[in-house]
Length: 54
Image 1 (cartoon, rainbow, N blue to C red):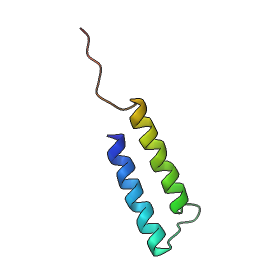
Image 2 (cartoon, one colour; image 1 turned 90 degrees about the vertical axis):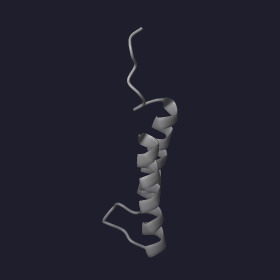
Image 3 (cartoon, rainbow, N blue to C red; image 1 turned 120 degrees about the vertical axis):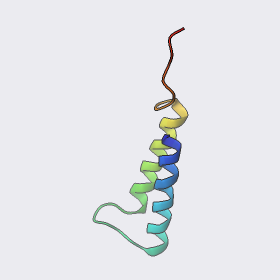
């Protein structure tokens, strides 16, 4: 799930960069950092499937 969120954030960051848009302090650099954070959390296993008891 976090990988999908990261992909969406990267898409928004690309649009912001190509259109030279900034919403106050939120520019494409902030979105890329947020996307990398989501990707790192996904690779670390956070937000994955629920663990089941054996």
